[in-house]
Length: 83
Image (cartoon, rainbow, N blue to C red):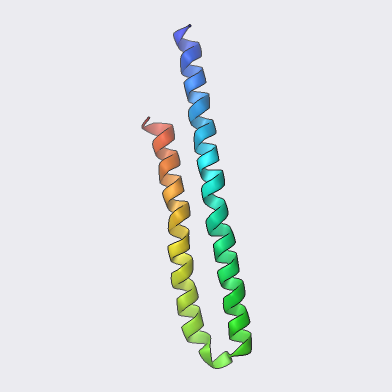
């Protein structure tokens, strides 16, 4: 096989792999953070005196959930530029 065609196939495979990695890796944090914010707002509406506690817990939970998306981005960069 011609080396240029092999490189093109490898590059296409890297791009597809990185895209799948980010596609799957971004769905989880998006759904999780949306659910967390929704439930925190429901709790704030029901118990207004707990607003500060619910807000700080929600922000911490969203930050932890976001690490999954950042990890997926790191893996996608490794696939594209290192391998």
